Length: 458
Image (cartoon, rainbow, N blue to C red; front, side, top):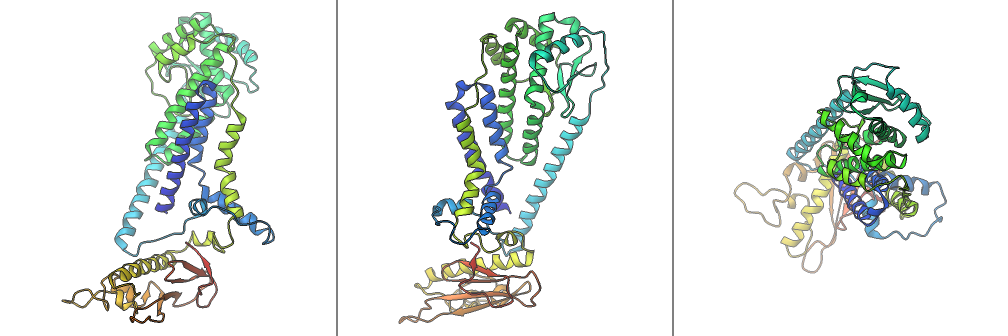
């Protein structure tokens, strides 16, 4: 699992770096476009390519065997194709991995619970029908063209305007704020929160922070969340001016509100005093009501989406038969004893490679030849000290390991070998495994000896 996680993080990081280059190239497209690019980069961390390649392989199985020509590049197939589980035979290594997984899940739970408690804890608020802000809100809702009704409430427990809530958004204003702002400043501040509501920023902010909570240990996601925050505020600033707010009033309103702002931001809420103020002020003053929204390049966005979804599906669909095994999903969820058998088999393959280098190109004549020498004896061709005796004995965790040495050459060196791994007692759901000098591990779920013609798992 740790290998699969590392592989997924690497592919997501490469995708995020590519998105970063794209945002630099299209930086003149506007913050709304850059925001969509970074949001897709964050979403990629929840979308492993292996899942979609498996989906493609399942779709291919529904069609006749001759439906395609198998022309998937080997490098792409090896990267996208699902990884099989490799459990180290040493208990100490397994314990370390289990500890790391436990720390990850615990950190994820703490982050999510802490954030959700803060998100769902609504500030105390009241409704004031006589406040001039109510009339301003109704007028601005029609100007913005909001289809969803947004309520206006007042609270003395907040220091800046906030858009709170996901399904039923509420604009919350600090008590008395309308008396401290001019009509133009108040209008621009409320427009900012309506812009967040129209863009559904609370939903996307909650989504991106949820991804960050899951991968809390990965700094890149925290950085991406900061980019989303910055682009989100800049996009709303553009909308505020475009909907008729004077840039001077808007800047003055933000500065007055920010003098009162002392609270920390919560992901899933939207405020006006967020992001880099200096850069925002300069950007706002450069805007005008004639500024038009720059559309997101659909072709490029479609290409990025295809890279996340369509390419892995096509790789799985066009992959050669057997590239995913006959039942890859079962392989990926093996019980610990079967996964351990695969790990032991890989250890034997590795030991054989070392043996061949140490002893002039021949494979070992038996499993015992890979084991620990007797006390006081040095490693030799009959006991190379490459595997524990618990494995060379031929049985391990309910499995029998049968080693067969092939013919010898003129020098007396073993030219090939094979290892079969079968459960001592066969039960429904068990698997048997086969490996030889090629290093390929094969498997079967039939109650028979595994063969060199069975499906490969690596």
